[in-house]
Length: 475
Ligand code: NAP
Image (cartoon, rainbow, N blue to C red; front, side, top):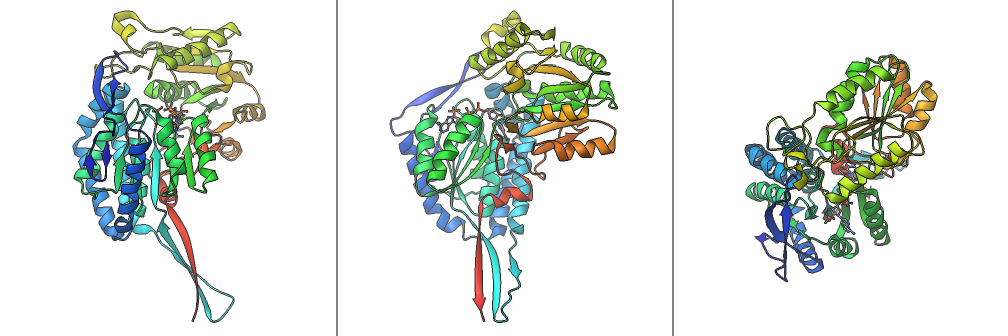
């Protein structure tokens, strides 16, 4: 753990193992922190806030820019660690390190653009001035599926704004968090400004985060259930909260779309990170007139995806994170088949060729999905493409919106009017129109409804860490 500028052990000197999900081997050990470590880290962050918030935005920007450069220099090492710890293929891991570094660069620039404003008054002797100031100590909690970029997307804007941070990364991926911290520390982030608390049991750390009065802001990325619980507790203490939560993205393919192009896009985005992405399409609505061709192309592409260790060349499907994840995927697939879905590919756990040591599930294509199936309602977080057909635009839109989630949605159409109607009608925060990668450090990322509160990245990202202060001056 890293507390008050020192790499440190937990008070009780306890530690836990970190595993490679591809073969179950132990790849490292980290300290098992709890409430006491969290409290010490918060104290350090509160003390450091006094100076960090006062140095110029130019100085903070320079440090973030240096951290960006270090992360790019160390890309290969970070990617190797990520593949071993989280499982995604090395190529995807390199892309994530780049995406993660992009947030440091973006917020190094945004640090210098925290503008205020003046507002005319109805009184001749009065002037209004609005300024933005850093909130204070930020407590951040991140998931394992994007173990580098989910950290920089929070720590980058928090530091740029002048806040100090205590981070609790996911239990499954603390080694990536340590390497991100090394980039920030080597770039010159002063002691106490960033603090890292690793732990096996997140509950006591989370409790300290939401109850300690020195914490002014909680930023969380993870499941909707945990996000709601923490946001509820933080609300009781009037802390600012942002939450990036689960998703259940619809993928709509209209009759005027090219089914081959759409199927290629569907395969690429659905099986990215073995389906373990919050923006992964969970339900594919395909117009009945092109559904057979769409499913054929999808099935052919999916059957060529090779599963294995992400360190091997040519592997496209890494392991799922743990046994529970495999069981959840299997339960959704079995339920769909029992209720009448057609299985085109996959549909089973992979155990041949040594894969039994890891958590592999075959890339799967199902069609004939109906509203009574688990997969229609629940986020899968696994490699399953679930296809259903439609023949009416309004009905397709209604079904796409028929979810408590509202993170990402995808639309394939060549009709500009239809594209605009879908962009306006879909109740989701991120819409890809003929585009499977609608994400960038420069673009606001976040969801509606049960998918969360607030936005990360873009101009909005830094505002999450700033208070608005208004001065009325009588002259
Ligand atoms: P999770 O179980 O909610 O865990 C997320 C983080 O919360 C982990 O660090 C976890 O620690 C911690 N946590 C769990 N229980 C806690 C508690 N009682 N108090 C404090 N912290 C607690 O979610 P996950 O399975 O890791 O992540 C997958 C979910 O994240 C999916 O639903 C996915 O859609 C969502 N996600 C959303 C976005 C987005 O931007 N919207 C991005 C990525 C992922 P431990 O690891 O120690 O359990």
